[in-house]
Amino acid sequence: MNFFTVMGELLAESGFAAITWQQALMILVSFVLLYLAIVKKFEPLLLLPIAFGIFLTNLPLTGMMEQTMGADGLPHFTQGVLGVVYNACVASELFPCIMFLAVGAMTDFGPLIANPISLLLGAAAQFGIYVAFVLANASGLFSPAESAAIGIIGGADGPTAIYTATKLCPELVPAIAVAAYSYMALIPMIQPPIMKLLTTEKERKVKMTQLRKVAKVEKIVFPVFVVLFCSLLLPSVAPLLGCLMLGNLFRESGVVDRLSDAAQNALCNISTIWLGLTVGATAKAANFLTPKTLGIIALGLAAFAFATVGGILLGKLLYLVTGGKINPLIGSAGVSAVPMAARVSQNVGKESDPTNFLLMHAMGPNVAGVIGSAVAAGFFLIMFPQL
Image 1 (tube, helix red, strand yellow):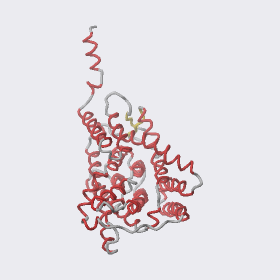
Image 2 (tube, helix red, strand yellow):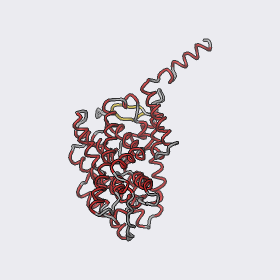
Image 3 (tube, helix red, strand yellow):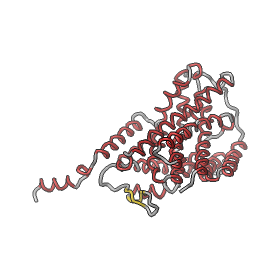
Image 4 (cartoon, one colour):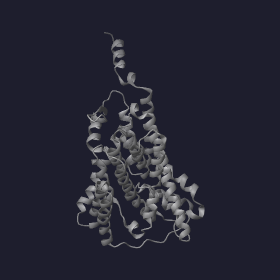
């Protein structure tokens, strides 16, 4: 056997010979996302592991994440190192709940407590959820339950989107998860054009008064009350809100600093790495480039856009009602991507007036959106049969 024969056989058995145009396209997509994460710095903590997961899973013959059909007749990613992690920790709802624990430990609900009107702005930003639900249902491609899971993408809350999809349509979890986390990372691109289109220069320059100081007892009572009320109203949302508010109680109680630190750092970082990597790895070319998946990607973008529109429009109404005391830009932060959306509100406001500081005011609707998206998920889980 000569050298050229050996090389020919090697190439015939290699990934170079096995790669398809669909895989090549998905690898190209991963490179674009890596560019946005590293060069443009669009939420790299999320986008970089997602992009690399897309890259790894579309390399032919690597077997890092293989799909098998389960006894329930549904697809499961149970083979390959990434498939095992995904099935054990993402599809099982473990990582979504851990992420909510971490988010709660890192979140200050003070701006929301100090300005309860933020709850209205957070609720208004859930408009995108219901618009996407109606559009998905009307398309004829998706069942009502699938449409509900797709709609949750508009809440800009990856863990809630995964949690809802695993309950209502496990076969769509990969596409919904990729759409939710990718669009969350791309909020700095999606929101500003909509915000500038719907607001005037005068509205963007509005300076809001300083928030009152919130007492410690208020911050301790708040998470307990939210879990009590929401869980009694919508029991299905208790796992997510329970973890969220437990993390916040770690933070605000002041008596479990070690637990709070673990939730904010070690747990959060480990979960972010594996959640992003495995969610990206579900975007296999053979499954991803389908009419349903592409429809989910399009509907996810519409959900984010209408969520921003809903928050801004209510912000404009409150601007008029209060005689110009509320800057409508903070309404866009009602999507629950904490603190990304609040930073976008701050940055857009700062473009119109460099001395304007909206971040803390935007954090109120931002954290309200976390609760709002979880409540919307709980509503859908009650309305539609769970698998």
